[in-house]
Length: 115
Image (cartoon, rainbow, N blue to C red; front, side, top):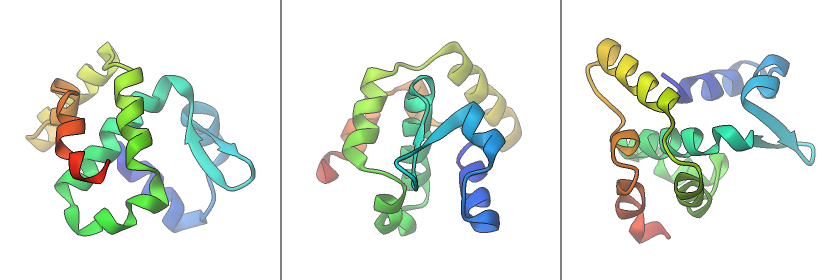
């Protein structure tokens, strides 16, 4: 539910929407996209979950970000109450959960061969 916003935006306009930048991210040095500090853990766990569920796209991860950075953000920015509520809501609609929200320690284990 989360990661799709970024991909749809990239497909439709090839640049971040202004309202998305204000709420979720910022443009860094012209073209690089980076989430706001308070969103980094949430984004890291969502991106890592996406590539866990869709491994056929793993070669494209470098276009989204660096796996080491996502692992570090996961450690530096713990799961919040909002993350848990979003995960609960996703489970109601999708029937599955992001295990990295429930068990953030799994992120490093899942990607240890890439770090």
